[in-house]
Structure formats: C-alpha cells, structure tokens
Length: 235
Image 1 (cartoon, rainbow, N blue to C red):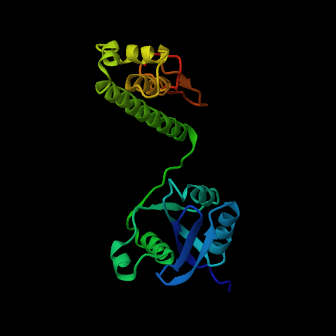
Image 2: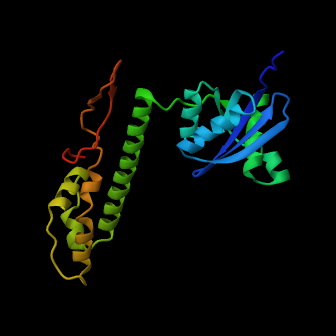
Image 3: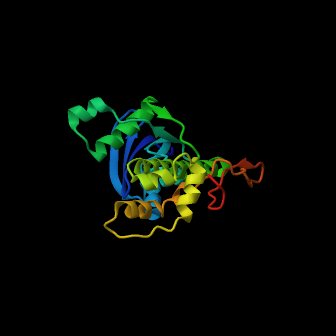
C-alpha cells in the first residue's frame, strides 16, 4: 500500500538577501530548516526543499509586500497557499532571543494554529499599478511641500530688499518669479547668496501640480484616473 504524502506547514523569515525556511508536520513537530538566497534560483530551491518533506498545506511568509514579495509570487504560481504573517511571537523572542530559524519556525506554527494571519495582496494588475503611481505622487508632493516651506523660511530671514520683492505674492507667482530671477553679486553678500540659493528650487516645487487634469491610465477592463508629474503646469 502506497504511503500517503505528509502534510506539512511552512514558515519563511524573509530578508533582503536571504530567506530562512522552516517546515513542521501537521502535529507541530519541527522537520527541517534551511537558509536560501533571495533570488530566482533560491526560490526554486525553496520549492524543492518543501517538496522533499511533503505536501505544503500552507506557507506563512513574513513581509509579503516587501522582502517576501518575489517569493510569494513564485509560491502562488506553483499553486501553494500563501499567508501573510503579521508579527513574530514576542514572548518567544524574549525567552529565546532573535534568530532566523526561530522566526521561521514561529511563522510555521502560526500557520498551523491559524494565528496572526492575513491574506497577502496579489500585487499585480491595475490595482498594483495605481499603488505604484500613488507612491510616486505622494513622494513628489512631500518634496514639493518641503521645498516651498524652506523657500518661505529663507525669505522670512532674508535681507529687507529681497523680502520686500516677494512680499504679498501667492505661492505660484512667487515660484515663477524666483525661477525667472537672475541674481548677481558677491559670494560674501547674504542677499545675493540667498537669492542664488532660492533660484534652483522652483523646478522641484512644480512637481505634481494640483490643478492639472487627471488623464486615464489604460487598462483592459477599465481605466484609472491619475495625476501625472508635469514640469509645465502651474502649481
């Protein structure tokens, strides 16, 4: 009579360069653990490593949206059930300390006990495209706000002649005026150095204008409105 394949549960502690994989039985018994490179060849070795110990009922991966994203895609493409491990067992860490094998085994135990799990995002399709573009937009907006605040901070403490030149201007008009300015003077003159420092900043502040019309990001089934980065629109 053929022996039925053993059902196992897998936990993965992910890092930038390596992943540590641990396998336990359906009764919670540790079977094996090993470290692999976080590259394509390493992912294939992880699949082979799991297959040699039985049939994976589920795989718990830490950081499916960051270091474990690549591995999660490979595991799902092979038909394996992938679950996100929300956090390691802090009590076990205090007792036994931090180690990759411990975290991997704790991830496997969490899968077996159905504790601290969530369904990872697929990270593909139009939703993922939207997330990437929104991340870029958010970063550009933060840079824009920081640049404007620093410009205004420099103008507050600038010499009277320079401060009076831009007093009362709305932000878009002030940015345009700064960009068109042609400061001249001596490197020991604070007014000249302030004007020279402000001169290169306007291109940064013009990223992601708030009034630009949102075009449509094409998709097979529907379109997603997005605001692009434009260097010609007014802020």
